Amino acid sequence: MFASPAIKSQFLLAAPASGNGKTTLTLGLLRTLARRGLIVQPFKCGPDYLDTHHHTQAAGRPSLNLDLFMASVEHAQATYARYAASADVAVVEGVMGLFDGADRMQGSAADVAEQLGIPVILVVNAKAMAYSVAPLLFGFKNFYPGIRLVGAIFNFVNTASHYHFLREACADVGVEALGYLPNNPAFTIPSRHLGLSIDAELQYETIVEALADALPQTVDIERLLEVTRTAVPVPTAPSPEAISSGPRRYIAVARDAAFTFTYHQNLQALAQFGEVLYFSPLTDAALPTGTDFLYLPGGYPELFAAALSGNTAMRASVAEYCLNGGAAYAECGGLMYLGRDVVDAQGRTFAMAGVLPCTTYMTNAKMTLGYRQLAWNGLTIKGHEFHYSQLDDHGLTPASAQITNAKGVAVPVELYRQGNVWASYVHVYWGENPVFIEHLLSTSSPVLPPPQQS
Image 1 (cartoon, rainbow, N blue to C red):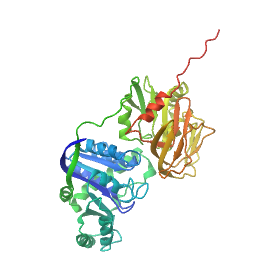
Image 2 (image 1 turned 180 degrees about the vertical axis):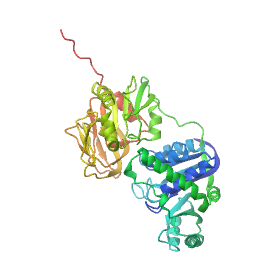
Image 3 (image 1 turned 60 degrees about the horizontal axis):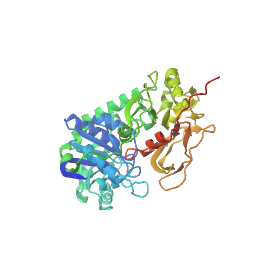
């Protein structure tokens, strides 16, 4: 599958638990390395599309998800090898705690590190800890022999003398101390549910720049690159992909500040079926001319509800396309947009496209999160669910799909179908095998012209 490996710096940034600052450190390192003129390829363990969005902004290259529940090990390995091959440095951000997976450590950051054969750097919140970090590091280093923990970077460190105690602990357990990030309010990442508005984007950029200014002062970047140099498999050819034998199509994909939750691999796979044309439900007046398939991904439509509702021309264009038999898939935020209304957190109601007889509510918002597996139309489809809104489906018709979580337990989420429009709260991953999209296209019913009046 692969040619002779190249030697380059590559590492996975992990943490003992969420909240240790691995995303903060990842964004800062991506920008720091890019400033040096290095080609930096970011990756993210798990299904998170928010972190990959900001990775892309920090590094200047699309960030790729490596998820061992939604896709196979072989797909993750091929994706990693393909995109890391053209970079100088590959940086993988872990998910949750190092060993936290869908089932024990299955699909965890440790699992990804083992399958890719890359070293691990542990990011540790040391705000209220000094030499006691030694047994923590010892445990993470020795718990599972399938990974190589080669270094640690500490976050929320108060002073240089504080870091001295941490270095001593590292030396005593055989884990190299690579530096620290001071406790600084300027490095605080905004809330994940603020959305990707212009203000939030500017705030992220300011933080990333501040991190890139500060990191080289307290983190040994050269040593980090040195201790993580190892073999990267180089693919002999691009990953084989099944090309649809059907007609070439124009595939319209919503992409703007309200619709950003996409997987790079999914978008690449859509190109197998035709020409991908991006459009903005916020600012454009109509769907791209000749649209044959419409993809409305997730995002934060509730934060842009007034603007989406006010763009009546686009709402009418989407409704006309869908109600006249156009094939479409809408997930999460896309489902919200195709509904009748969105009720925001303040109780204000905003009209949406009106294609589906449903209303979504942000009042009494409650997070729903988890992996999902769909058995539908003879297929097994994997993805995940992440939303705060609640759906009143008004009798919207389910598409007879059995949906379970990662442990096989049924969950109260549906795949809906109305005409040639499919919609769900599930974010489906088809980057490895786009048979899901192929089935949506192949099962779309032709639209017959109305009977002629005599």
